[in-house]
Image (tube, rainbow, N blue to C red; front, top):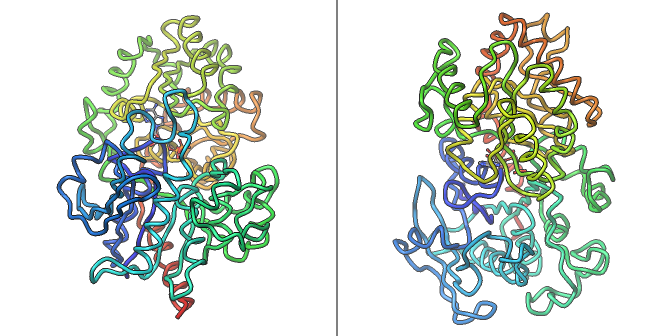
Amino acid sequence: MNILFVASECAPFVKTGGLADVIGAVPKTLAEQGAKVRVMLPAYPALASVAQGGETVLSYDDLHGGPARLVAVSAEGLDLFLLDAPHLFDREGSIYLGPNGQDWHDNHLRYGALSQVAARVAIEGIGDWKPDLVNAHDWQAGLVPAYLKQHSGPTPPCVLTIHNIAFQGVFGPEVMGPLHLSGEHFNPEGFEYFGKVGFLKAGIAFADHISTVSPTYARELLMPEFGMGLEGILQARGHMLSGILNGIDLDIWNPEDDALLPATYSARSLKGKAVCKAELERRFAIAPNPDAPLFCVVSRLTSQKGLDLLLDCLPALVARGGRLAVLGSGQRDLEDGFIAAAQRYPGSVGTIIGYDEPLSHLMQAGSDAILIPSRFEPCGLTQLYGLRYGTLPVVARTGGLADTVIDANSAALAADCATGLQFAPITAAALDQAIDRACQLYGQPKIWAGMVRRAMRHPVGWDQSAEAYLALYQSLMPHRSE
Ligand code: ADP
């Protein structure tokens, strides 16, 4: 089975969040199960050298304002189609935002072009390669199903995967003309979103199936609190909505063999974890304290992630002897809040503002627990890394966090199956109670060590989920329009 993935980011080349990890990892596992995936991405500057070594398979004299070509190339174990359109993608800095911190003014053209070229490849194929199915990811690829719908001939089935419904790609109705979108579908059943054009809405309206990244988020999306205005159309198309949990790339995230750590370790021998902890404490100027846990945060600092709640809990966390290392960047108020906390609690709280992939590995290895108080979380990956590295996740009971962490309540402790802590409702008071419970459990070393070992053995790879994707793809094959 040939699958075309269409996405805006892909690890290890270009990453702003979990989407990239998923796009970089799933094709490898699907390949082991017999499906061949090609990933279509924009040729951002980070991919320029990769694109140079590839073969031009499509050319455009003018794709929304300049020449463009599609390059086929293999790199890092992935087969890629790179859309090399310098006027759209050859820009330094953030892939989504201009220097003023606002979305690039032409994001509709940038990702409209990606979707248009992807639809063409889906319909015509490249040489003797033709996809049996397309999987479009998030709003940036949301127009792919719309373009396929507009095509009068046969098209392969298309799955839209929603990684975060908060990002929808909504633009004024004037983009319809330049993007060659048919006015026939500018209605609530189509891509119209309250008088505007919604890229994600288009994907939801026209995909043959909609998947998201955890079963709980799939249910939550149908509710106004989580659906962010799209719950109506999702309810209408609910029969074709499902949740498949994300996994993690066990080649990259493996404490037994992680070159980014000062020492490696396993569930059998945790000695190396103590070495990582000492190094983490040194990096964040945090004083050792064997009696209380070292918590960490590795996150975008945005209101989604609920880290303002953590700021409220900090005095009590520190009073209990707990320590906290924060790595993140994002909203100015949260960055300032954690910088101020580090100044207020020297030796107990350390903050590094920025994006640092190697340091994120050390944080997962050297901490005792990772705090994830998200207000909503489609799947979340950092709790999965935490499980793998024996760093117990303390999570809000929502989305994929609810699906992946087994709370250390008395029944789970008695049954020896707890792997972390959950809290609800998502308030500072409930987070504070969870932190308190974590501190109490940490004070019972046998119980804590048992949870750490169990967490490390919890399956978090892609095998099961890749099987679920494959089964989904196969179920759509007979629906192929002729
Ligand atoms: P989201 O995609 O909403 O940001 P996820 O938990 O799904 O959240 O994925 C976040 C990914 O980005 C993880 O791989 C995490 O380790 C990484 N990450 C987030 N912030 C940072 C940071 N400041 N430095 C390094 N990695 C980070």
